[in-house]
Image 1 (cartoon, rainbow, N blue to C red):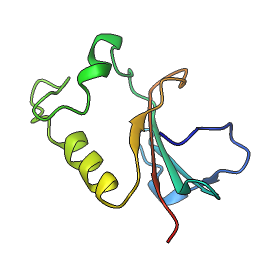
Image 2: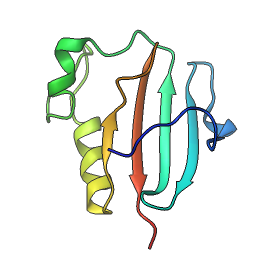
Image 3: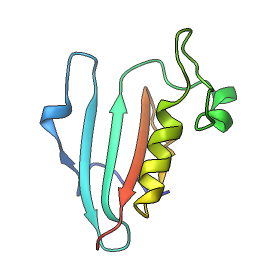
Image 4: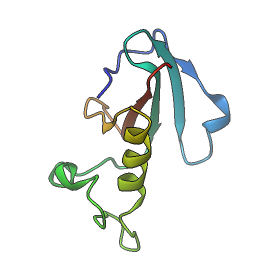
Length: 102
């Protein structure tokens, strides 16, 4: 997974910020290409769910289908990138993915 540095070098994507406390940021990296971080202010991912998070049909939501993250990871990987959970987030949940430069 692409490394997630501090705020330096990241550009906030203001249009992604909404009432739900969602923040998206982007930075360019010579090794990883375009690196995106999406961070919410929710309760976070329970530690016992982290290993299964990208499995098809696994969900922490009562009405969840468990397909969103599995499909997202497949799309990113089909473009040569990587998608993962950044466990260094102090609150909420942060996912980081990259799309390599062409």
